[in-house]
Image 1: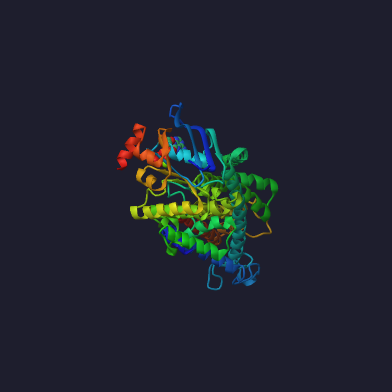
Image 2: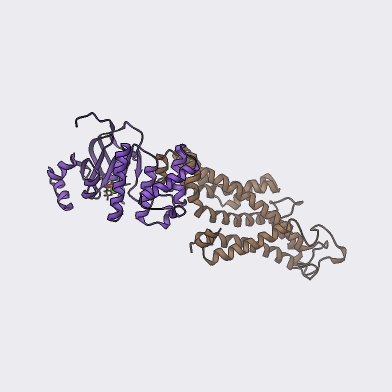
Length: 246
Length: 270
Ligand SMILES: Nc1ncnc2c1ncn2[C@@H]1O[C@H](COP(=O)(O)OP(=O)(O)OP(=O)(O)O)[C@@H](O)[C@H]1O
Ligand SMILES: [Mg+2]
């Protein structure tokens, strides 16, 4: 990296474990993250890949401040990130309409009047491949993929500098997936947005990300520029992932 | 309303709603118009059975029983309304705060609730009223107080469940304040359990008022209520006029049947 980039997130030696009580009263400790460290810079899309259960969502929750207990330090140098949650079924308030859900963050921003809010919502819905007809619907009347797109719209409407997106496009079919990835890339170019982009799909990561972190069983096994990871993976597990995506 | 109907398209809900609306409607009309003045005595028509002139008959003083039931039911429903309003209101407030914030205050308040609910609430109310003495306001205060724990408990459970869901986390990230999250984001999602509880609350309040007043610790001797009338009507049974007690009892039964069916219907979807 030639020019100096602004660091927006620093994760240092983060470890965490979940404790579970077995029926016999013994507490079992499951280590989920081991000594995870990395940095994220302004305008960068960092991919986080790894098999199911490797601790990706746990790491995201720690960064967002939702993990009650962990060791190590997480420092935000810019404003707090917005998020697209992995589970689209609990990410939207079931008692509210899509319009209400999308308007709420804009009301909090206090930057726009009623008509401007409405215009922005409709515009953003179109950008994620939905339209005005969804405004009056409740989340229960939407498919998983449609819900996921509403979540993405909600995150982007907040005009954040940094988004943590946990498998945002996994539930979508390829055409919509391509459209959303294009939108995320555009937002990145236009506003210098940074992403922590979690995915199990190497191809998707390749389309959006500049750098990749590979996790396995709570450990970072490899980290590198996207081209290096694809062309010369060092760790056997990374090689496996890259092979599988071809 | 339309949505409620679509969501609870079951017979409990329909019958309960119709029964409740009819009963409450008649009672409300009765607050503005009754066939006779409930207190007007007619020496020429004492202790009569049901007739076209007096639908449900008259008492010893020649007062129209139908008119008196309307007046008494109005008083009972008004008491029930304030009991549920205060009980559910305070219970929701306590449950929302403790469920959302948790911590030490939560622990303490929930222990107090546990202690209160360890006694049957009717017994607790009975003792409290026996000490305080009868009277409409005392009944409302005491019943509201014993109703608080059950509402606090269910609202607390809902708040502590919902606060962990992603859409609440999201609202926090969006910078929504705690109060707004509680009122606008979480509270609407507690309605599926809160509405049936309110309906059952009406059922319990009507029943409790009737029992307290029947036992003489409810409303005072100068006040009217269904429980008070039920107590008075006992004297008529032995003298061959059972219909007074039957009609009062039937009114109570229909009121609580409506509320409990409605509560049941609201718990079942479809
Ligand atoms: N709340 C929790 N309590 C106990 N264990 C948990 C909890 N959340 C996650 N785990 C465990 O921690 C491990 C890592 O879970 P995590 O959700 O971070 O994985 P992931 O990499 O996001 O997987 P996926 O790709 O399937 O989403 C798993 O073994 C999981 O069972
Ligand atoms: Mg996950």
